[in-house]
Image (tube, rainbow, N blue to C red):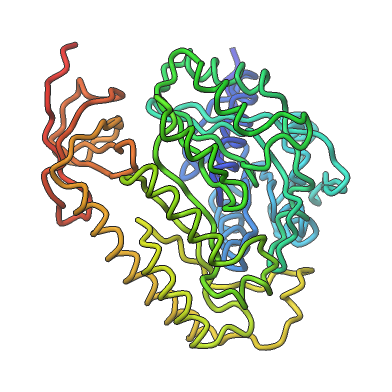
Length: 437
């Protein structure tokens, strides 16, 4: 019997990419490949790229060059958003054999089998804005959680963003198909699903099915005990969805909501579909209905023409709405976007200074959120990873809890009393009862 070929995967960027990489991996494993870590020598490497910022592009290029040096005889595949937006740029990197556009991920296994010897890279791209295909994807391999793709593409065309060019129009498969995939995940023993997409709350453009109906149908899947919505635009996070999460037995009080700026002038230049008054109303309504909810917010600093005064308006707004966490992104020019040719670019050192100020604010907000929850009993899904004598898990409202390692708690949802905050920044927890094997 011939030795199985080795394949390694590298994933950069969003949770959607991770779900798609996992699906790609299963195709190879079903066809006599064995998966190895990307740090090992493999016969094939697949790099699922990200292009959300210039720094993301740089990381992709560095990784491809590192792999080429590590395994010069391997077949190297670049796919994902960077591969879609700039295929020639990636094809020019020495050692890259295949560049597959975002709509070509499902064909990568077949493309790899066409490579007999290393030569000039083959480019398999597409006119992404015209595509109507949907690459079904979900992740497996983690005993505790899975990312389930429910939507792809975006119709919003924000002035700074290349995602519509990389991912195409908003589209989805049916609720029935998604529920079938959720049942497969449940049958694997996974307890928690994170539903993900490019613009997740825009689900239904293809099938005419409301996003709320998707949530209700997923809740009925036996075996899945918890769901999180990975990210949802504020204008799509309706009162009905918030109230559904409030009464749901499975959907968790954890919201990731892109803000991008707390200054209305900048929001208008970004072509976002709301203003700060609307956004604040969304946040206030969540806290009114679900007081202990975790709210994470995306913020871009240093957008073209953003003055110190504009940034201070954003800073004050974030203090007022009091989220639990901030995801901070220094603005980065993206080719073929409206803002790439705008005047009034902010210097890198100023962007770094503003990002650092928000990082300090984030740490304070996060600490206060944990402090407010100290003394409360929460349900924690513990992960299999062991770090020294400790194990970790997340509560319903996304508090990371650490407690002394107990093997029998792995993959189990356990009631824990939050007792304090550790030096690591995680919450400390006391198990309220002991599970029996």
